[in-house]
Length: 489
Image (cartoon, rainbow, N blue to C red; front, top):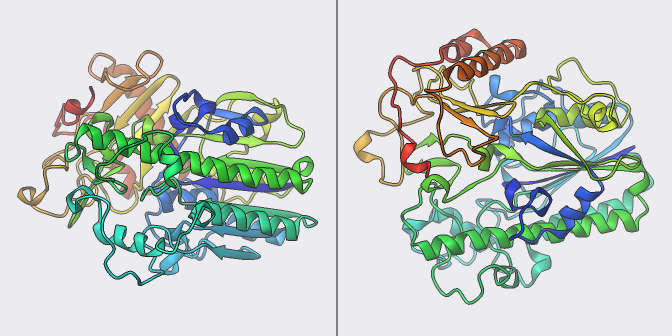
């Protein structure tokens, strides 16, 4: 069996019709879902972009051992395992962070192609000083926006957009290699910001807008935008989602045209979501000049889309078991008849898709790296059953990630503690799916169980005691309860 894996970055689950969204138009992914096993409870594991791809390529929960860094040279990776089994493997990507600066995520592939120009990719040098789409104070990193504008200055039509170029390159590769046994990995950075879909897509959601275009919003409190600007920012993202859907649809059409549907599995997913004003935030991390801190990973960010179309599989099946990115490597190897290496920590999803099993694991853990330094304050989301615990660990060597400036220098849009770590947050997802009401204090017994289960999970993964010690204590000595309450609605 051939396998095509498609990852589109920063795709919010609740913006897809297949998960119930009516506002944003995603007909192609919705159609794919009708032919697929759709996972209702897929969650990010290692966060964000680069750690996620490391999970996918190694089949490991790499948050216990790595951070945002190049793919380790001694890691056993998916492409190498498939290559040794005789498969042709191809990577086509426009996501710059996994290819630039020696990050080496192309390692092991028979071939690979980098579609240049996304975000801060140092690709083009003219025009030297393109005008910004909004006041610089509203943009996360104005130099990055200028670089992106240089990279897109020669764009003449929709076909020149990055996701279009990436999907078309994948279409062309399939036409040339359809008679081979293959694994094709397609990775587009869209709908990650900067959002720059053609105007026709923007007009689907906010026609006639004439204000500033906040295409690359500040990561922090969103009160730097007017309500109208925030509304348009959401429209820009929705437009990018529909653009991605259109070009993923073109890839799916080409697969069908080439007669590959009968022997090719298609997997679609993303790495994480993005806050669009929920809890008063934009982004997914607090970032300011000289410092950053972690945002808690609520469902808008942690819960992700995942679907798998099998050639002879049951169509339109909805699965409620947990699934996470480390499960993709063993699933792909299982589909292709290749033995899973002992280094893999994920679980093949083939048994649950075939109906042989209805259970994977009892919980999902979503977190930034816990292995950069002994650190209290890095928020981990533990989802088990209908409960979600957001847990910050105990005070340690790196409080709230890499908070590196004196509190007086932190800009107003950042909300970070200056001492201790926040109290845990517990949410009843059945009755409070928007996670507005923290019931930790009245349901502490449930939080104790989730915390103990997550510690046991980390122990089974083999997490170093140096880092695990800061996760064993449920309530830190210093609690900043209510730190985030003002944003919970």
